[in-house]
Length: 478
Picture 1: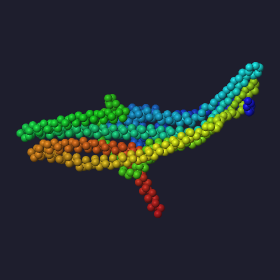
Picture 2: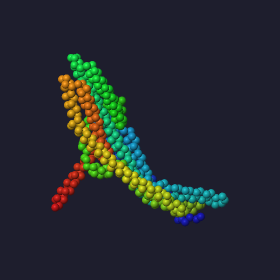
Picture 3: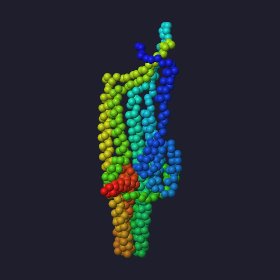
Picture 4: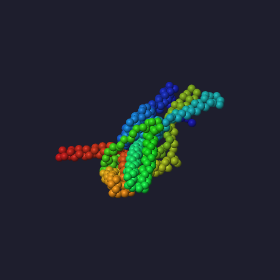
C-alpha cells in the first residue's frame, strides 16, 4: 500500500515533533488554595465563623485550638475549635484537593500515540521503517465541555464539604448548649439538694422541741437522699456532656485542653418572617445548591453524549523511510458509527437528568419543611421559656416560701411543704429542658436556612434598607 505523502527533510521532522511535545506538556500545576478559601467563605456564611482547617496551610492549628480553651469557653470558641480541629472536617477538606486535581487533569490534552514498524529485507534491498504520530481530534473538541463539567464537579464537591463542615459546626453548637444546660442542671441539682437539707433541718428543729414525729424526719430525710442521688446523676451527665463536646471539638479532656468554664449563650432574636427565611434557604443552603449543580452536570453530560456519535478520530503525521528516501505525510484514524451510535448512553444520560431533577424537587421540599419545622419549634420554645421565667418559676418559689413559713408556724403539715418543694425542684429541671430546646432551635434554624442568625438579621436589614431606598427614590422622582 502506497501512502500519499510529501517529502520533508529530517530537520523539519525533528522541529515538528519537538513543537508537538512542548505543546502537549504545558505547565499545569495543582494548587487548590482558592477552592479551600471558597469553602471557608461558604462555611463563614453558614456559621458566622471565619475559621476553617486548610490542608498544608493551617500550621498554627494547634495554637489556634488551645487559645480559646484558656479561661472562659464561649459557643463561638467551641465552633471555631471544631472547624479547625475536627478530624472529620480535616479529612473532608482533602476531597476538595482531589477534585481540584481531577479538574486539572481534565484540562490536559491526551497523550499522542506513536506507532512504528521496522521491516528487514529477506534478500537484497534496504530495510523499511514506518512510523505515525496521532493525536485524538475529537478529544480536543470535547475538552471545553469536559472542563466545564470538571469545574462544576469541583464546585459541587466544595459545596458538599462546606455543608459537612457547617453541619459539624451546628453539632458543636448543639453539644456546647447541651454541656451548658447539663452544667446548669448540675448547679440546680446542688441547689435542690441544699433546699431538701434545709427542710430536713427545719423538721429536726421542730422535733427537738416536741413538734412533729419521727415519720416527718424519715419523710424529709428520704427526700434529701433522693435529691442527693439526683445531684450525683446531674454531675455525671455534666461530665458526659463535656466529653461529648470535647469530642466534637477534636480535643481530649485528659490532656488538660478542656478546662475552661462554660459561659451563658447570648442568642439574638430570630426574625419570624417565614417567606424571607425560605427565600434565604433557597439561595444559601449548601446541600440544595450542590443538588442544583448536579442538575447542570447531568445536562452537560447529556449534551456531551449526543456529541459522541463519532467516538474516535485522530489526526497526525506518518513517516516512511526506505533506503535513502524518506517520505512524510498526514495520517488519520476515524471510527465509523455504523452499528453503535451511542444510543444507550444518550438514553442513560436522559434518565440521569430526569433523576437529578426529581431529587432536586425532593430536596427543595425537604429544605422548606426543615425551615418551617425549625421555626415552629423555635416559636413554641420561646413562648414556653418566657412563661417559665415570668410566671411559673416565681410562683413556685413564692409558694415554697409561704409553705415553709406556714409549716414553721404550725399552720400546715409536712406533706404540703414537701409537695410545694417537689413542684419547685421539678419546675427548675423542666425549665432547663425548655431552655435547651429553645437554644438548640436557634442552631436548627441556622442549619435549615444555611445562614447564621446574624447573617439572617443582616440580610433582613439589607432588604428593608433597599426597600426604603427604593421608596425614597420613587418619592424623589415624583
